[in-house]
Image (cartoon, helix red, strand yellow):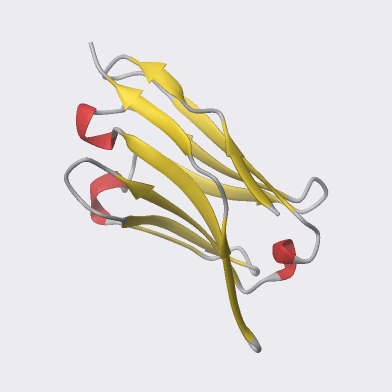
Length: 115
């Protein structure tokens, strides 16, 4: 129901945009999130976008990453700029609802930032 794509190998300073195709039902959830799993940290919440379009970011990516959603395509995006080696990891999208409480995570996509 959630499938991330768009990962790859890039050099430091370059940009990459990730996509996450979601089912119509999951796209109505209260929050859509991007997480990443890096060699250093087990799992890190990267960005959140609510159904109303409110966004929040972890400090490490503020000003460099942008989360967005396209309701017509049921697709979540993560635009990543000025990538750093520490951004390397598996990125995956997550749908979170509260009433009733439900959550789903999809398969990740690998991002490698290396020269």
